Length: 186
Image (cartoon, rainbow, N blue to C red; front, side):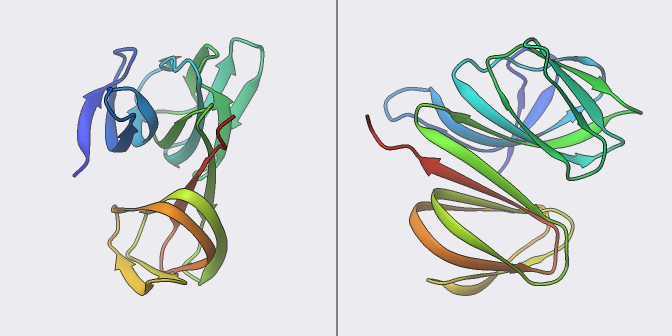
């Protein structure tokens, strides 16, 4: 079950879909969430994390980072990668937005996000330690090489943990696929 929680900076509320915490501590190794942004303002600071943000609803927003980099998400399903430890300020283009977020502790995981905007069948090569699939706008049919065919209702998140390889197919809905690749121990 998804849970509501305040943003790290206190500026709003996020819907936490899933957070994987380090064993024996409360430190998050990666998290998948959704949030509404209703006003211009700073993003929460996540030192040591990489972030991926996907625009799910609204007319867009522009992110201005403390290092001078700017990103504009002008269309639904635009996405951006950025470091969580760089100060980031959001400016709404024309009203509130809703976004999908993946954050990952960069010394442990590398996040990769793909958005498929189609009701047709689409195949994606999967090579990850963790896979999260979110059915955005309709019920989704998933076929994976090991478990076969199964459904995912609109608004639900499928989470599969453990090493996996192979081509997965998705049909019937727009889908956000997040792969978290575990980095090798140094």
